[in-house]
Length: 225
Image 1 (cartoon, rainbow, N blue to C red):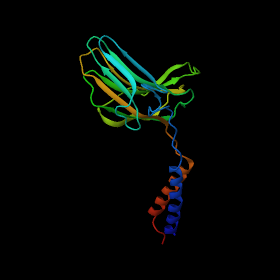
Image 2: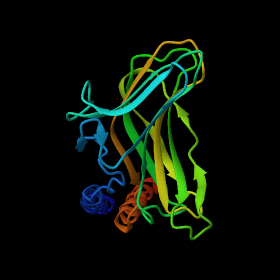
Image 3: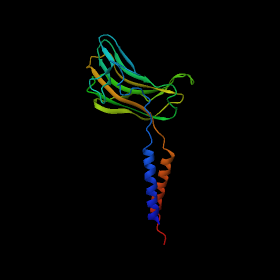
Image 4: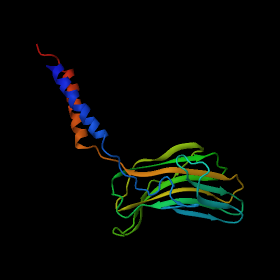
């Protein structure tokens, strides 16, 4: 009897699992995450910021020197100097009401940097904003800034970052910065950026899990005599 029930359980669980796996993934909330769309050094959908003081230099451009995929990538370059600080950033603000407070989100981007001199810091951050002002406006929370390690293209980001209460949009920031310092230049590249809502387990997933647990429990029960 138990063998027959186990066979029926497998027949039910496998199709249910396939149905769950076949469900479409959450849409990327970022526009032009691969930086393929744009004009020359300007990437569509992104705000590019570069500030520098004294003899330091900084730039934030859409480049094609070494993309992870496709033909283009975000390219942050910075040359520090003792007489001035420097910062370069790519930013994108998602549309109002694209974020649900309290829900988990994954942010990931492919990152590459051969080296950063002393005092130079590369970071990523996601800020949760109230763009429509319905909860007082402004910054509602942040993932905090994650300092980046050097190396060839590898994924960096945040898993299950919870959107702050009162937020309705997200500001994604990729940056490099340096205080006034005598150091070597930095060359940071980003590609394939994505911000997605983490999907909740579906009803089918819970049904499949329940059946699987039931079958395991039945196999552990002593046989009746």
